[in-house]
Length: 278
Image 1 (tube, rainbow, N blue to C red):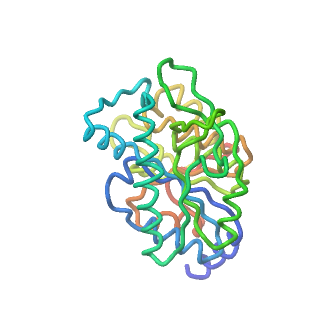
Image 2: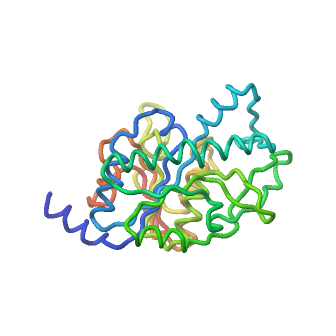
């Protein structure tokens, strides 16, 4: 077991892995072993890049300020005032909390948003109407990520993009991670969530689908098996694969050291999506 783990660790040296972490996982208030895993990966010569959201924290802040939270087709309606709060939470509180946790675990991290160095260039979503400052990634300038990684730090990226006029845009963190993984030529995209992976429900116990092809994922979406919050996660995986990332994974954080198991064991964990049939 140890020899096998060391073999995989050596094989991953120098490679980039984009990890998306946030939303309901961050909201739990317990990072589990994720932060420790990131620090260990960096120490093993892997280059992790952490992308995060923070939807529940944004909603709490809006509630505290007496501002109503509205969603259209799962997307947060983001007027100018809401965008200020989104940026304050994501690029401020959530981002710096993760940076601090990495530092306390013995690592070194640099926090930034997609606005820094024009990292995540975005345009406003035109549909559905009335979303306001909600964007989609249209370009990535990843040089700043490479600079930070080469200097021995873990980049921690908040999912706020920069629009054509310099305005801040609220990005889906899953989609931002997928776009970043493709642009960086990452060897793997890993999306951390609060479920073990992509699940098939039906009579009896839910079944976790450990390996899926792009075609199989699209069929699951068409059949409604992949739905709600899982949709942007699998979309991010598909976009990363289309951009040249060899494999994308959706894994749960309830298993200790899930990230290390995924990278350093043959069986891995969660759901792996590839361009090849399973």
